[in-house]
Length: 112
Length: 381
Image 1 (cartoon, chains in turn orange, purple):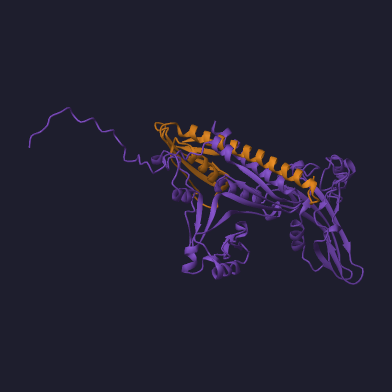
Image 2: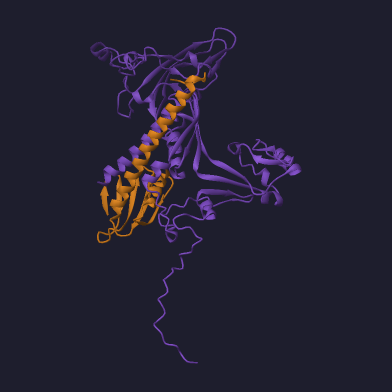
């Protein structure tokens, strides 16, 4: 077990291909999104998350890979999610600008 | 029978059992594509509700389901349908339910706002009890950008960067008086109530202390001069007073998140639904077409005249469908109408309570998800 701040990684030192990451102060919000991005990665054979008890804000994320260290794959999934969020923000801002421009011609109630 | 020996027959080309000419490799056949991208809303229960996430799910068809990020970038779209000061409706296409739900959860519980937390009551002779009055004050939405303020913890002193102070002093002289939220006065210089000490020498030495220590007036911060801080709605009824009853109190508003208490939630609510898809599996004509048009309470179907002079039903407005399933009630109708939902097309509606405009709220929610990931990343490395 390696205790790193709020996050704990459970796994054997000999077997880097799989591990369970225990995140504190997290819930379905982050865990389900990470599970999605992990699944998109072809190196992952198994991924899932569980919440041991609903009153404790802890979530366990299990990752098993085809050979790469689980920690690296997990980190890559987090990077992918960050990239996705950035792209969502950009696209959203563009769409809002477009809506405003097209409505400034008509008299709709829009805050500038 | 004599064997005619000749050269060995030419080796037959090896054909893989999976190499079928009428199965398109690299693409899914239509029924599987439908299973992958649509929720089938049948009359008893919806099917195929889970999204097919695994990257190797369709490996035998040589279809890479990994949804690589380039793929996401090309296919992701946002369309804003309606945008007001207080609410917005927009479509997100090409994203998965888990991320859309994450945004919804963050909007409701983790985008911070300012709300009244501590109420110092000097005088309350009304019929509304102290705690009920304080509870009601906490629920009043305050029109101020919470990003300008810091969080306050137990040991911090309330100062101009983490507290907003309001004063309420009303007295009913005759009849009935309704106390509305416009009576809440913003005090940009901080608390007006003096802290009582038993030591008069302390007051002589360092001057009388109030409950907050504002270094400078909040009116100088940001653009509070032109936009004074106050409740979003001026007509929220706080209490009702009878003759001779009086309320004198000071309310301190601090920054918090919906997770701790719903008063800090920046949205009245935020929700999404998947885009409905209605398909007529057979031609529905004449009497049946009329019946179908009448059945739908939200006018999804309409009738057009065909060239032969018959009336045919068509799907006019699938987006309005509320999935009441009235059009598939009965055995025969289930064969004629198919009700589905598109798994990656979300119609998001955000109703803001007023602290921040809805488009800013959504951007903040996405930023918060990014911050969560960064936090985990920094702890992993």
